[in-house]
Image (cartoon, rainbow, N blue to C red):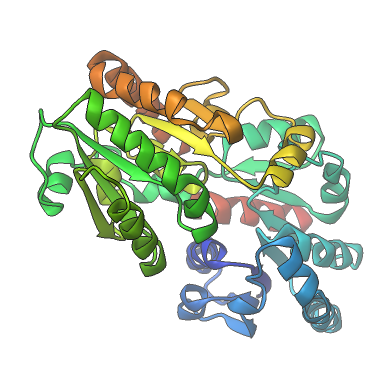
Length: 380
């Protein structure tokens, strides 16, 4: 059995490797080809292009590389139409994969898309294109599945691999010991201003201002900041040196999950880190900041009431979230102080997060493979 599969970035490589492993359990003779990264190659994939060929972020960067990206897609289309696989799976990268899926499905090849585009949040008209392009959507969040069912797109909620990977009962004491932090009842706050320099340049200063404000309100709190890259660490070190006050802040190279797990509360930039913080069952305050033009457009295009992932998953405002001009010390500081002071509120959030973790802990790799098996059997 030949299966075409295309992942567009590192997160897709992780999803693809797990799905391939489970599909081979069902179909021992399965052979995979398309585009994948190191993890998918380790599972025996024949990748026609390196994963990095598709890993382009930002509008201007995509436009600059557009001729090359379109050439890669034409080549894959030609290969798969000349020698059709039994199935094609596109993992994320909707701008690349949906067009390819449409062509292959029109030729009678079953198509699956793994990880929903954010069509539920903005440009909802894209759902019509999705409905034409795929036979099955594999969603990683429950609210996505509800959206696609309403729009008559075949969908299966498979859960999120991170929910399978992160323990349902994290070891707080071990995390604090590993980071050389005092054990409970000492108060620790984790500060995560983002994993990209563009995020940190916007949120880093206001996050450090918030730390300074909190230190004045509650001396004795220790702050830990995981740095995703050396460049981010250098930026934050410089920002700390420029302050008149010496703050009780420890920078770490990476180790974000340990920092989350060790903390009583987390101040975090919007994105995947909010999902990881929720899965570590840590109370949080979420901030989002982009350029004024991008923020202006987002306000007019985005159709959901929340942007923090825990709130989207729960369908209600579980955690405080502040965007753009609202992401200020005046808002972030008191919200964090409440979480540090109010143990009952922290415990309530931890319980809600554990329920959401359980909901998303579905053995995603196996569920995705079983959904693919059912699709193939229905086609036969």
